[in-house]
Image (cartoon, rainbow, N blue to C red):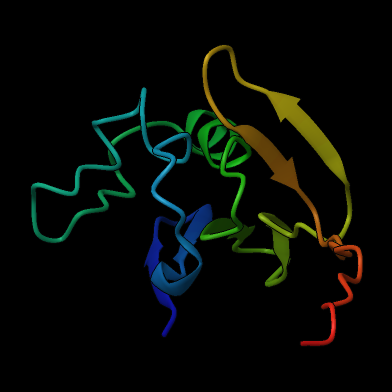
Length: 110
């Protein structure tokens, strides 16, 4: 499921199945993102530049955007960059499509 919230300049995309509950996507811009309200997004709540800057902090790709004149996704496209951010006293924030390979563990015969 994908939801969209638009202004005349930008469309915010929301894919809840990708959301990892880090709140990096939404914290700091409660005038736009407020999960206590319905609808939980107010695309008119801040300038396009401010919204885009906040969405760029979304590590999961659950939030994205595209501009009205381009009709293509401009961010939230985690395929374009790969990076790892260390959060003090917190998790590692991994951005991008990565393949995690675990070592093969051979079980001992019984």
